Length: 318
Image (cartoon, rainbow, N blue to C red; front, side, top):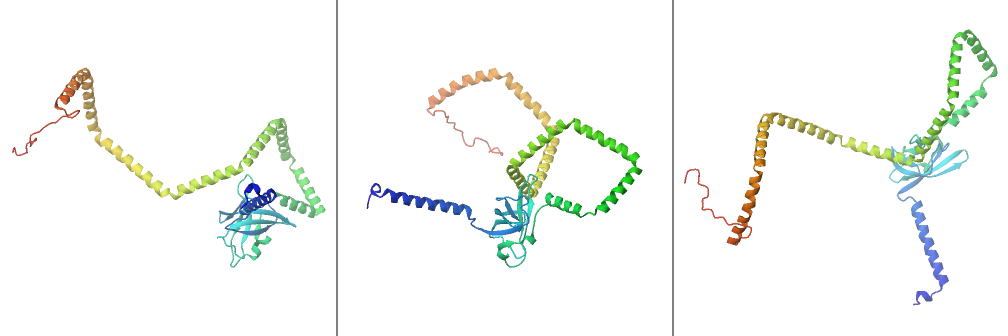
């Protein structure tokens, strides 16, 4: 067998490239293909702000991810993966929903119906998106175009006549509007600063939306755990209250006895404090005597004491 240094370097390089390519391909496949999940498609009228990577929820529980968003004519195809444990029936529906006020969304999927979902696709008639301001403006413009000019002119004439009849009331109202306009104009710089600060706060919140969502999720977990253990917490509070009452009752019952006991304890402490010098002198003289006695009987730090049995006489005097 040839040594590695004797082999053709071109062949070795080619083999290394093939092995590296296979490893990279395996990593890509593992990262892209969601094992344990199944892919579906939902056809929606518009994205409504939905983005790739956002959550797919079933009954409020995150169960998958949005994998792709593609334009298909005048509609949008949303590819998403879902846990294989979730079975979508023939009448399943989907809805794009707003997760937070900061602009994050998620796809809410509702499994429904018997059998299986045809072509693993939720059709347009069973999907919905949140409120869209652009649609409202377009419909308003269409409505204005459909108005009859003659009817509009008649309505304006009637409004003018009514205005003339109530000019005494309209005058002060217009004066108030004018004053409001002057006040806004005089403080336009402050309003501009306020709007700029508001925009900065909004941008900051949007940039940290993921952290805020995670914090809200953690808060929900804490609240759920407290709710789950509310009976134990209630029992602990009840027990603490009972213990506090018992301690209070004990202090109340023994207050008369504790007072004299503390007085006598103080007297003993005062006596020991007064005899401090005597006690120190006694201990200083007793220590050498104890050492001499231990050396004399050869017992070290111990002293043998012999007591005649019985040491304590019986109660009957025997």
